[in-house]
Length: 312
Image (cartoon, rainbow, N blue to C red; front, side):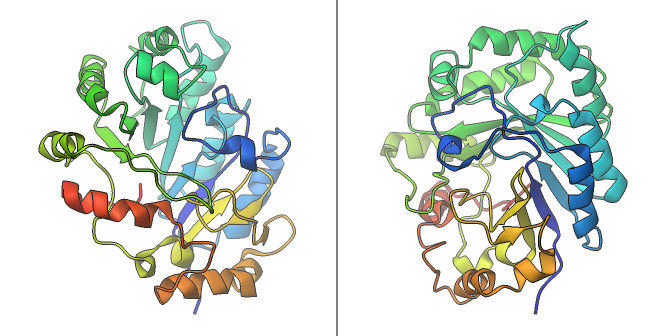
């Protein structure tokens, strides 16, 4: 039985202005491109019968670099008006008054329900992990954002935690408060490659610090096994080319098909797709999933005492 898709993760550009230390984009992306609006409409048409509850417009690129990203957001909401639309941005561009990106950014907010400001670390650690990002450019971005009409969009900070930036979390939380942003979301760093598992490196003191001070901010589920994976049942991940992959945790995997060439139902009922799905359902993962970084994360989340959401 094939369940309807409820969660989509759609990449509309693979252009990016950064080379983050935890991102494997150089290993997996093809030719740089922005998805034309005509192709995006074709993609949405192919899945419009599914009861999408949440959509993320992100991937291996910086979404706001798409020259018509505001129209992308608007189009998504035209097809799925009741779905929560989530977008992430690295904040490394100028949205000051009179700048070209400002109008696109502000218009996109009208259709976006949740916007993540991706800020990992403070000053030195931020510039290290998000090279060639500049802290000063981030501050200029935040200054440009002040006074902007948010149109009801919940603007939050998404922070990827690693052993080298654990003690910068409080500084970013203060930055959040100073800029009147929503919650601070903490995600433990994961490796998005099929042949790699999550690196460790946390000290007992760091684990204790996270547990004592930030367990309520860390996203994830400590009680999770392959059979609990929602991706194989009701998720959809597509690249800017229209390639369908199982999830955003394994971006290096071979695609199961292309939505511009094959229907989504044919792709999801294909032998290869079903093999991965059945492996997860039976807790006997195939090579596609056996090194899942989310699974590797479970013991750490359990030790910290995290057990909230699985996705958003």
